[in-house]
Image 1 (spheres, rainbow, N blue to C red):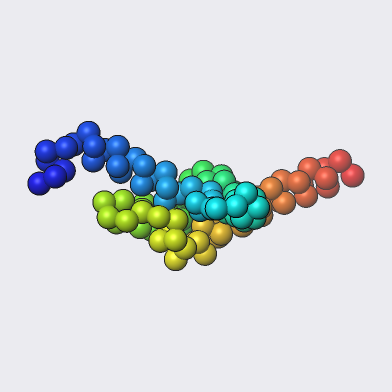
Image 2 (cartoon, rainbow, N blue to C red):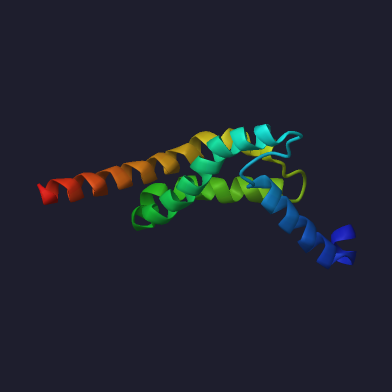
Length: 116
């Protein structure tokens, strides 16, 4: 009922929840806590995004994990979308981050070997 009567407010709320769900750091009281959080999720989430882009060519193999991110996010947006509810999918996020690191390593290795 509320959604029908307030579509603009609902869109704004969903947008805010999406940002809050995928933010790089939780709401912290102290600056040092924010810095520590940025040293973890501030690194692996951007690497995950790059890994997802790099894995598009293997979409058949990675589509299940990508769908997991999308569905998991969509399930939480209408209700409660805080960073702590993202924690169960962090291992899968780290898989894509590792894929990015592996890709960079392979490219760097082939570049170095081609110059020798």
